[in-house]
Image (cartoon, rainbow, N blue to C red; front, side, top):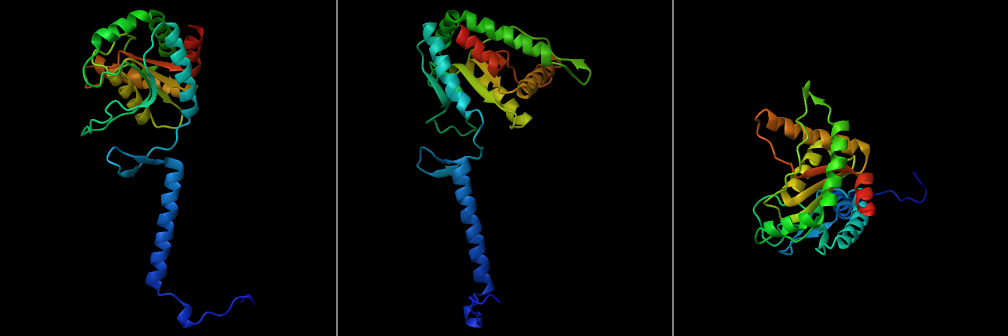
Length: 248
């Protein structure tokens, strides 16, 4: 016995159920604050507190950099539309289904009605951007496309804009950490939301995986399987998108 400790008598000992309950509460409190620290608190429109289930993404700093460079690029092209990070396409609509969040989105935002003619006009203002995206994407597709079970990937198709888009450009940024299913979801979300969809891999591994996932979707279409059409999606590396925007 340590001399400074006094011997505990029977009256000093807490009942086992009480001690066990205190231990559970302590662990719950620790878990609560850990989630607050690493995952963040989200307060929705009804002022109810919920917790985000996604860990902080490594792409956050690049989101900020890309947003600034993209806004300046569009300004030089005479496109003065809004550029937003973490854009909620169904914000305020209380949609009874999963609602994606675009890493970066360029307006105008078609949240109330379709803006087909406005997106057509914007496409005409940035033909160099679309051509550069095509060139880089084709390069990546040829390099990383590979084969699936001995069957060649579905051939690269020309750009076909999303006629029912909610924004002009939708951008998703992917690092090595998310799963392949997560990356597939990013391709689907970007293609579904934007007239032009750009999915950026922050490293070579991510670019390769994204290209092969898109190739898989195109392969499914080639054999008449249910799939998602993403002919408006371009997959680029971080270096490629920066070279396009900074050099344009």
